[in-house]
Image 1 (cartoon, rainbow, N blue to C red):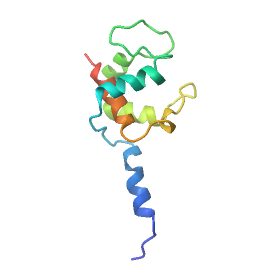
Image 2 (image 1 turned 90 degrees about the horizontal axis):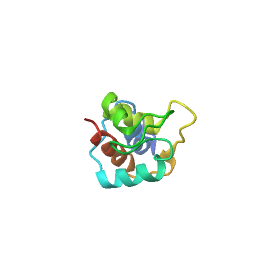
Image 3 (image 1 turned 180 degrees about the vertical axis):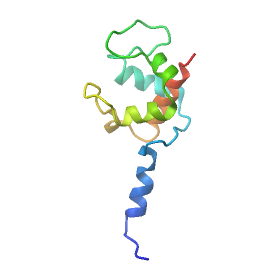
Length: 106
């Protein structure tokens, strides 16, 4: 068997971004701060905040989506109105976001 240098490292580094990979528990407070910075302009990020016509609230997202679906939508948005914030997020910030969003599920 022939090994390709760097392939294993690249493969392992990309595993968290694979579809269906479960989100780890992140930091709830950090997720809230990130949501306020990056998401609150378009989404209602509070449990009982004001309704925004064009975007779902984080509470609605938590109610109707799984952790994996939320994580995947953050990584690869399905529409071009939502920027790819993953370029600005490092380490476990995506897990922090998912943890915060899922905490709003009733």
